Amino acid sequence: MEGEGPAEVKVARERVEGRTDGPMRVFLMPVPAGLWGLPDLRVDGVRWSVGNWDRAGSGWYAGNDVPRQMAVAVPAGRHQFEVRAFVYPRVWEE
Image (tube, rainbow, N blue to C red; front, side):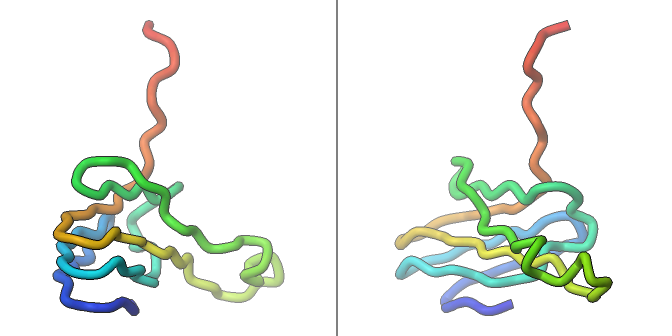
């Protein structure tokens, strides 16, 4: 993982949680192994977009063992953030 401090970041099998304070920063890191589907970033409870890796440009189709990468941007100031698997909202009520 790469990124500017000060920051407190905890990486678990299915999510990433952290706290930052200071300038805007971007953390470059692998997507946790247990996080399937799209990563979903929340900064102070508000949904943001995670920069996801380029599948076609990564070499996965050629059989290369390329880890999934993501870029997690956190705005300037004191914030808490979390990345989990995106859960699609229900479209129709049953």
